Image (cartoon, rainbow, N blue to C red; front, side):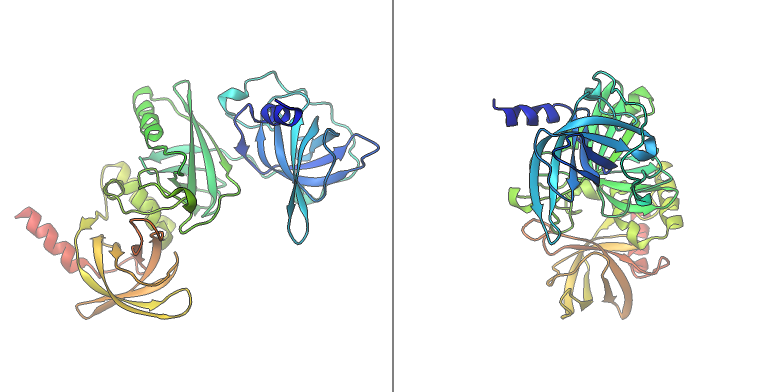
Length: 397
C-alpha cells in the first residue's frame, strides 16, 4: 500500500458523517501561505473533507479554527482534488494530527472512540472570520414516530424539505445508520424523514431490527442527523426502504407502488404532508399514535379525467385510473407527460372537478413509471366522499 493509499485509509478508518462546519484554515508552513474560510463536507474522528477556494500542497500542516466553539487543532493535507466550476474550487482531504471528536458532535458513532482530541488553548487568529462563518445552534433530536419507511423527529431547528440526510440511532448498545430524505419540515416543531435505499444498500432489515429494539428495551435512542451531500438528483430523489430497488445507473428513486407502502400509514402521511397545514399533519400524526387513521386508503380502480399542463407547458387532458384513494388524495396510474411534485392538476368525475397537488411522481424506468400521488388542495374536499361512504356502508352490512 503506497503513501496515498495509507493516507486515505487513515482518514476513512472511522465512520464519516456528512456535515457542514465552517472552519478558518491557516497554513503553518511559511513557504505555503494560506488562510481561508472553508466549509467541511464530511467529518470523522480522523479528519475531514472540505471545500477550499484554492489549492494547497499535499503534506502541508494547517491549523483548523472552529471560531464559534473557541477551539482549534492541527491537521495535514493528504488529498487535493480540483472541482472546477466558474469559480474554481478544490476538495481537500485533511488528516487530524490528534484523532478524536474535535467536531463536538453529541452521540458520535461508536467507532469514534479513540483517544480524546487535544484542543490547543485559544490564541489570536490571523483574521476575523465573517459573521456567517459561525456555527448554527446545536440541534437536539427526539424520535416520536417510526415505521418501516419513515420517521418523525421533533427538533426546534429542522432541516429543509428535500434535504438528503444520514441518521444515526444508538439504542441497546448498538448503532443504526440510515439514509433518508426530509419530506416535511415544521419550524420549531420537527421534520418527517422518508428512509431511502440505494442499489448498494437496502436498510429494511436494519429498520425492522431498530424498531424491535425500541419496543423491547424501552430505551430513549440517542440520535444524530447530518446532511448528506452530493447525491445525484434523479426523478423524485430517493428510494424508500420498502420499494423495489432502482437500477444501478439510476441513482435513488421513490414511490408508493408496493403493497408494503400502502400498509405504512406513517410513510403515506409524510408523503402527503406538502398538501397539509402543520396543524392538519400533526393532528393526523397524533391520531396514528393512538392507532387511528383519519384517512385510510382503499384499493379501488376508478376512471377520472386529469387536466393541467406538463413541465414544458403542454396541455394534459387524459383519462387515468386510480390505484387507491383516501379522503384527501389518490394514487393514479396511466399518466402520460412529465409532471413534477408541487404541480397543480385538476381531476374530474361525475360532473365534479377539484384541484389537486402532485405529492409524488413515479420514476421512469421503474414499475412506478406513469404513476403519480396527488393530494387535494382543499383540506375539506368531498371529491371521493360518495365512493368512500358507499365502501364504508358495504363493509358494515
